Image: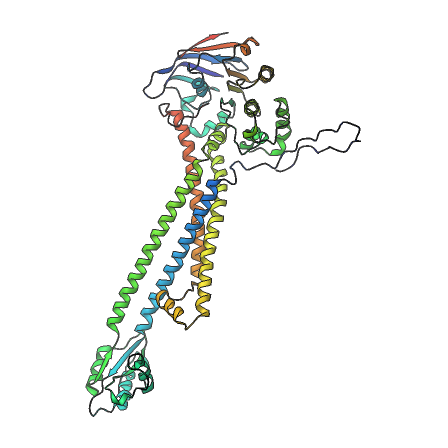
Length: 339
Length: 219
């Protein structure tokens, strides 16, 4: 494509002969659609920003969904037996009995008595260090791990416990679980809603930005049409151009979003067990997206590229259609080209 | 080649700009289209270029009735017509060479197959030294010559030119006219819309005079 006509012959003759003028060389053929202009760069920036936001939202929503799911499973994996102190109650024996009763039910896996030291640690934030449990009527706990797939009969367990140890209260966290499930579902729903909104905004922004960038190229479409280019040819020239722009833009945006998650995950991994990290983990979950998250980012990039290309195609086809519409209806003088 | 029969055209609800035009553009013919400003010369050229359809009447172009030609077949028909727009319509990001080669490029031809022809034509119209120049740098006359070269490059069967010598000096106008005549000798029918009486006086040719929407043809 970039071959040159003729060869430059200047300077090959003796100095006293008039120098032959060099043959004109033809520059490498430029693309029909100009490669860089202001609206093209602006479109790339818009696409990069929208891709970044969409990928970020996608990652954040998948993270929140994972966190919500983990709340639900961690809570329902355990039940607690609480035994209140009472006069004449041998607490240690009661704890052991309660654990044995619970473990006798099928569907329970393991039972752990929260010992005195652990109980004191639990109460430390409220009652301070050096707490003597004997001085206070502090209830004690047995934590029983259950099989989520095959949970025990909580009502029967509650009855059996209250028969032998009246001071025992079985907490299957049902209220908490129900609330958390509702909350988790709401959070996931809100996240999905935000995702839908951001994606819709992205789709519309990309479409309008592409159309805006194309409007500055209407004269090119007209000239191509009038020198005998078929609609498909004109459309393919613009499609190629906009595919490049959108791939560059969406790649930049997607890459930034992926980097953001990588850096955030790295920071979280490095600062584990610090208050900042714990807070972030409690609020957002862990900043790890897994393969599905990264595949989602790639899919978002592809959607944007496809969208831009299709919009370019439809807009060009429509412009050509409008030019031809003037042909069939002379009363449409609004966009009449001057021959 | 082109046949108009009782053709009339009006824009919207306005008055008829062209009325009852009946004429032929025979193959290999050469004619001037003239008339006062606003007489409808540009509109008539547009009808000839198939970028407008008449409000009434019949136009046959290359043995086909224009109103029955489907949209997707229009580009193929337009390839047989070369047009020089009054405002040139060159693409500012392409060089003179690339602008002139554009009709061949959109036909899917390889650059190596047409480069020599394009360069030769550019030399002919006096733009041999300006092949790598972008249109914004060209003078009005140079743009006009580039636009003419673009219309001629694919040897059209019909050449339509709207004021093709409006921006050039008399010697260049004569040179361009001889280019049109040469093209006509090679078999292209030529329609030149012009106000330039001195240009018309140089050639014994058919004159089509538009006045108040009506056309008189002087053979």
